[in-house]
Length: 79
Image (cartoon, rainbow, N blue to C red; front, side, top):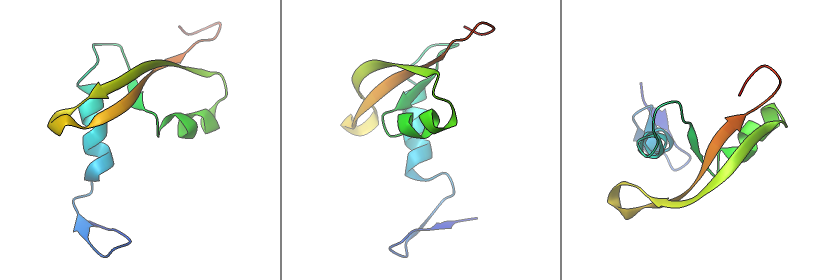
């Protein structure tokens, strides 16, 4: 399966965003979720009580700089 982009080019289904997600997750330890700043507003649409901690800018493969947030959720039942 391939994905066709607006410019007519095709790529593998995982694409750039999935590769970037993998590179960000390579930066964290076990039981830890990191997301890029582009993902934060999308997650906040799901639930307003999700919390994020700004982990600043990180350099991933090929020197790409990515602003990273730690993804946390807290309520009476979960921490």
